[in-house]
Image (cartoon, rainbow, N blue to C red; front, side, top):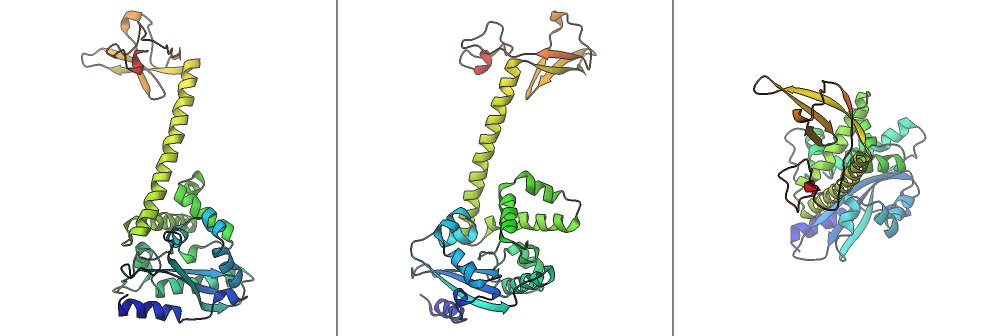
Length: 304
């Protein structure tokens, strides 16, 4: 380990006062580092608690970490030789109202700026101009403390919604309340910003979540397509559309789902724009002699 790295890590550890022994409210710093001499890497996370000792006990519960996986816990569990230490940064009165809770948020925010543990997008917005943000994007606070809800459940659910792109979070982004919209946008942008982190472990965490989200989206879309196909096989109503052709004539089309069908004039149906028709797909196990896709190969699903 280089002398400079060892000195910085030692300074953090010597801040002192194990928050696990404190029953007061306050702000703490979680320090993670590896013993591997070739790595010379540590990570910082700033948090707050109404009762410090209870919060640290929750952090140390492996089952809870597994159920509430975030960048903080992902890095913590990324190596078997990961070392962990908690130190106390501030002791405050337990919050008894919205106003006193805000003081706790402000204290956490201040410490996040002092130790530069926020994402680069938040540090750029909140640090004084021309500040040398040497640790920008290297540490583990994704959510902005100023926007935090006043219970763990609310905050964790909101962050989970932001990561998962759920409809609940989309409502936050579209809220008529300007403050809620601003919070939602910052939460979303901060999470997406960690994909550009200088730290490969933090980047991997973002990509793992992104891949998981894409797989879920594909599964959802596949189920939706199957449901739509089943509906079309049972029969559905569709509207007729008429489009002007290249030679002054009109093209008659019906659309259902992701498919559009041109209705040939030789059928003599005399359809008009806006007419409602009943459309039903027929799927056979072998190539159909009257398949709509006339150029389909025998091996193509469209040939059935």
